[in-house]
Length: 137
Picture (cartoon, rainbow, N blue to C red):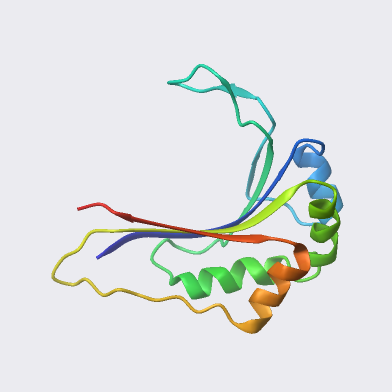
């Protein structure tokens, strides 16, 4: 059984803080964090190592990855060229997909399909794709 599914788009930068990224991209993030703005609980180091700007799908964790990807991509529809300019200048852009699951009686492995338009948009922005899956059994 899938416990959690989450999709978000993340931009990380050494140079631009989250406010500057927001202004440049033209989209409000769901969450953001300034570089070295807090101490790590275990390490005691300043975290995060880079400025972080994140945009969630806005959908429930039970929503399919496909639908969440589509929701994130739609929110960024007019921003791909501006994101590409940021990545060309040293920022990183990543579409993150997270899925946690516990096997069980009602387990059904759900796949994921990224259509050509989604792949093209990521390529246009110079963005990576990051997929995490966790077996919680």
